[in-house]
Length: 476
Image 1 (tube, rainbow, N blue to C red):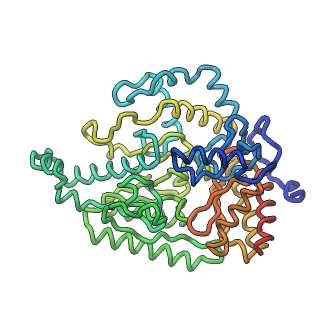
Image 2 (spheres, helix red, strand yellow):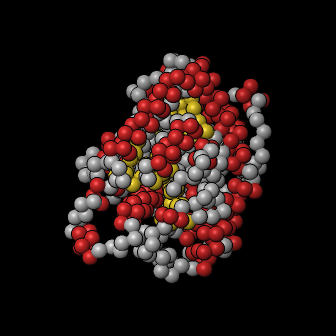
Image 3 (tube, rainbow, N blue to C red):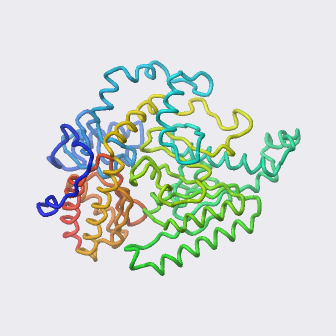
């Protein structure tokens, strides 16, 4: 670690005050207190997926402290949901100053009687970081809700276009109440093999990452296309990757031609997350955008995982250099609440078409305003880009040093991953990492994913990579 620490790149972010200096493991992980809580918890709620139980007050910065006192370096970030690390002083100060008091007394139905502060937050937080060209937003609670409403907006738009200037007929209104709309029932959304878009029933019809998500649930018969899933290093696999992207685009075009005026949208993750941290080139996404426009399908960028600064910009799709922005962009995770940004053409003509009781969470949007302020003030996106480049170089070095253990190091910003040689190695390796004090997660069948906070710095990368090398030696 000494050599790596000596070569750390400089980042503009300030040090996180009071953050632990390093990992400190004092018990097995999970420890006895965690296991005791799991037993109690499991009597009332499924606790089998819990890694550890956290001491919420003692966790700080990039370090998760569990109830047994173990200090763990968090690379997982509660599945990519922690933007400023644990207990950032600006968020705690906002709580203590009364800045959030207006949101603490009750939870409003935001579509009926929102507080005045809500309007100000939409302007100062959500629209401050809105994707270029998308001036409208619908807020919800989760990423799956965001996807549901994005595809509903696409269906409404397609139906309006097919209907033309004609008003909705009494027969159409009667048919929808009987679940009998012959033309509408032909509407489709195309998604990609390996994609993950949520666990609600509509989103599950688009999700193609793991069978356990979909087993025993009815689904729409919607088309899918292969996702390129480019190999790394890119220079070593250029021809293979180009062929893979061409095959994918050919299948997308075939589906669009086979179902004229029936494919309401194509939905895609900028980087497939749950499916295995799979990438495609900017050229692929530009070609995909052109296909959707040529065939009248909405283009949905699902940025639930990739949005919020983790790739070095607020939105991963910003790096594609599109001639025309996506029609809809979904978000959640690091932005604390869910939602969908949309172009004006996708705002329904009638109210209540896209609606719910809560329409998000005022407290979470109030927190997001602080998060955006800190990210801009402390140049966290710039820091994330620098730290991410250092991280990916380190992962590439690991793959070169341990070719029988690691391969395909990749990432954009700190949204990064590395593959293990065999899927059977993955659970054993994750167990070793946690025992050593790394809170980690997997994606796909053989990928270890990085989803740290925006305050993740090169020194944390160095600490993590040294532990990766130590564990890899036992598998080599």
